[in-house]
Structure formats: C-alpha cells, structure tokens
Image (tube, rainbow, N blue to C red):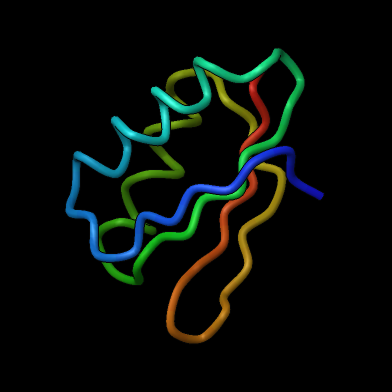
Length: 74
C-alpha cells in the first residue's frame, strides 16, 4: 500500500529519477511512494539510483506495459 503515486511513464532518464527524489523529499519519513516507470532504461536505472541514495525498494511489479515501483522514504 502506498501513501502517494507518481506516474512517470514517458519520462526520460534522468528526469524520472529527479522527479521521484523530489517527490520523496516532500513526503513524511517512513511513507511509501508508488512510481510508474517504463521498461528499459527507466526501470534499469531508477531503482539502483534510489538505492544508492539510501531509499528502500519495497516492491517491483511488472504490469506488462509498465513497472510499478514501491519506494520507502527512510
């Protein structure tokens, strides 16, 4: 279950990572953001970049035409 949702389908790298991080920074600690990402570069880059920044990836779900990523703010 997420506290907020961010649809970044069609958003190129690294803009999708930047928008995800900005949204997480506005959320309360411990809250979860659901991010929708395209296959390919976005789903390969964004989760790894978030992990390197100290965020926890709770779940990654393949929904056939996009991926749903659940990220917890520390």
